[in-house]
Length: 282
Image (tube, rainbow, N blue to C red; front, side):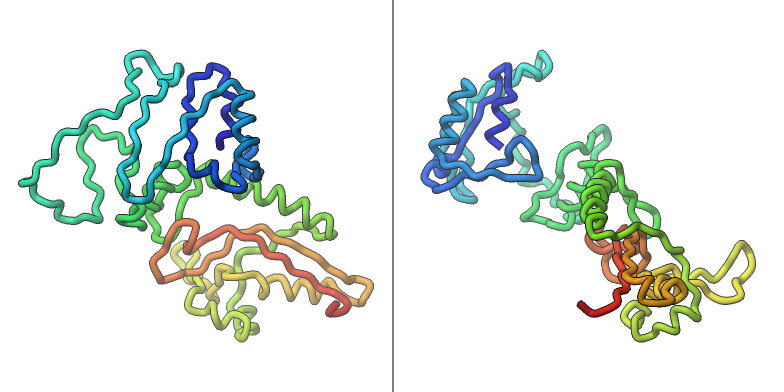
């Protein structure tokens, strides 16, 4: 956001503002952190920028589809020597007689290309653009089992931050963390047919150990009620054992047969589930 201009000690960044913002009642911006927003009247925003010793460039941005304005901005001093051009490189004219690509959904990569830039535009092919974004941002790597993905440090950090925040909140409610096995027996799963009926087509089964068959198939949990509640029945002997408040951070497997999509529809995914037993409904 524009408030970050206060950190530009070298004054080598050109701050560009949309003239249209100046006619708004409030302008929203991140206050130097991306998990919050602050609202300023335009006059206060300009006053802040001026106090930082910066003269903003005001541009009347057009609507979608209009030609983009050309800015002659400063070149940051951090850019390596020999790359001080602030203008865009000229691209060679397109060959009108060149044959069209055989498959517009296939990424055509020439030898020597770095693949560091998005190859697809969001409005042209959303699915390919989404894949570009999550792969090039180093959040996801694809795996050789369909529907399973590698969470790289960038994306797993988000999961850790969620856990850090959530754990603090549930501890205020006297909820404790626990962990239950990821496997559930066929007999136990079938006892809760009404509960798992909707998951039945998605249950993954383990049927072999080494070269031999298991005596009975073992399911990989699609959810944990059939694993946790029998334990609850063993632990709770009277009202004095209530309430029982447990949370579990775990992974589950649902062998989804529809088109898998990273972060949105995957066969294995991380989640949190809270289960409680109480003396009354209230």
